Length: 372
Image (cartoon, rainbow, N blue to C red; front, top):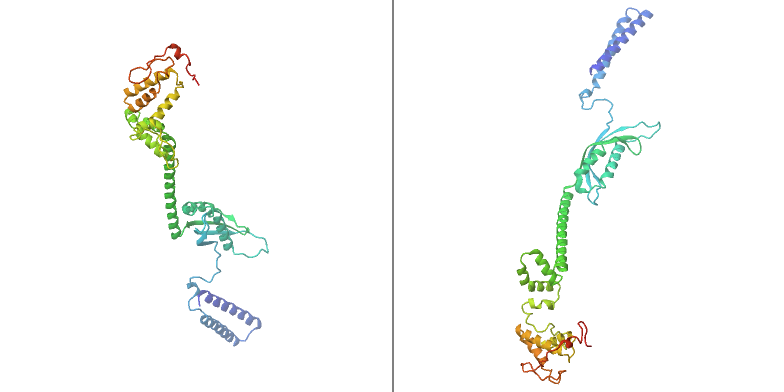
């Protein structure tokens, strides 16, 4: 029996005693009835004390962790490790927070709801709208965004509660974090490799399409890099010509044969090929014939004889005996009867006429015109 029960028993005993006294005086009880009434009152009080003592629990309620009082509804709940989607499929965020809410006034007859469930669902929906657009490797930044977005009390869709969230925590599983780190490393390496490949391709295009496009462009490029070494540039023309030809998969141009060792001694510029086995290699006589045809002087023109004679002398003087001999052979076809003036052959060793043309001979065909 605790103090509350004892006080109640004493209070009831006093009240009943007063009632008995009033009743006894009103009906004028005999003297012997007063002791009997008092004894009955005491016996009833004693019985009440005994019964109450027998019903007392083993542990008094005031000594329990939860006293015998009406429970208080809490407007706060902690949620942990809730999966929320990210911008990458199969990579979910892990969301934890303290959700707080307050019920709103509703009209009479509205259905009973679980305010905590509505508040948590509203918070998760607000968080989901942010995380679904966030890359998983930006979890720290997204966590701060959530802390700001969920820090305001807002009503849920049913307008029954207003809710907010505090202590937001957002992260990834360790396995997902490791995968993302590996993918990031691969992407970085791939980007570096792609940049190097583009740089190499650009360099090849610059060298092949600009610098080494022709031997001349190669020489100009070398001079631009070494503008004070002109002598070196001249000595390396053959090397640059070969480099340009190799870069373009083409033979060295004929104009640069004289700068390339091995090509300068060749008498022809066209080799027999398997595709054209019938092609004859051109000789020095062929080139001399082309040279004479390029003068546009007719066979009976004395200027042609003089030109051949002077060219033969120049070839021997320049140390080109093959060309000189070919020109001499051309001079040998002119005899005394070939000369338009009937002049006998000269004895200068060339077997050609010693006729010296006069002014009239050089005016027969004005410059730029041919006999043909």
